[in-house]
Amino acid sequence: MSIWEYANPVKFIRTTDVVLPWISVAAVLCLATGLVWGFFFTPDDYRQGSTVKIFYLHVPAAMMAINAWAMMLVASLVWIVRRHHVSALAARAAAPVGATFTVIALATGALWGQPMWGTWWAWDPRLTSFLVLFLFYLGYMALWSAIENDDTAADLTSILCLVGSVFAILSRYAVLFWNQGLHQGASLSLDKQENVSDIFWYPALVCIAGFVLLFVALVFLRTQTEIRARRSRALLARERQA
Image 1 (cartoon, rainbow, N blue to C red):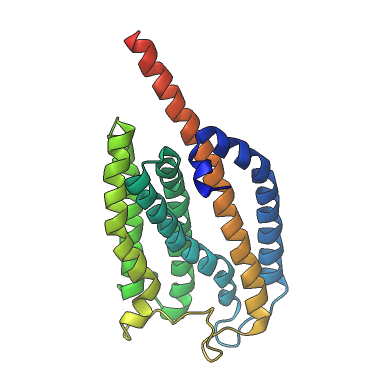
Image 2: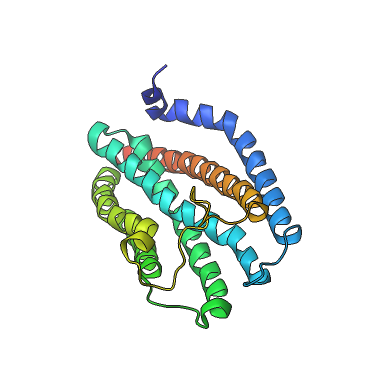
């Protein structure tokens, strides 16, 4: 069985109809377990107090904001190379989800930054690149909406996605590129000196799993909607020509 079989819209919808309920349930269970575990059953940090628990929303949202753009990049490249409409529509479907995760990351970061840094916002390299990434999300969605021809819109948004990927990389690695800045290093790291304590690590992993599953469920659902909307537009165009 080839993965390209799922580029067929009918095959994609049939398959996702089967797996979507299971992914959705798993997402709800992971999110509920991780957030309740993290917010109610972990201690306050000795320096940050209860503010540290924003970590359970901020880190998974920030990770998925970047990874959502990475998924859009892969889907856009598939469209450019192989011209599979499902891939272009999947990229379009992922954009509002990724933008929402970006807003959550920016908002929770501000809530954490005010008591820790004494300010809601700082022009830190990572924060700035993350804000620019959010603007790319908005531009990507606006470009899709502004162009009537779906194929032309897919071509132009794919190019925009390639350009925006630079800022997705900067968002991920800004702390490594620039040593200066308020933003701390990675909280989840293979380096034991940088990594958070196990008591925070395990519920955070459950939260991350929940965000990943939620992203997959929403992208599947929205891609189905985009496929059906494309079919409706095609049928209306045929009726007008007739």
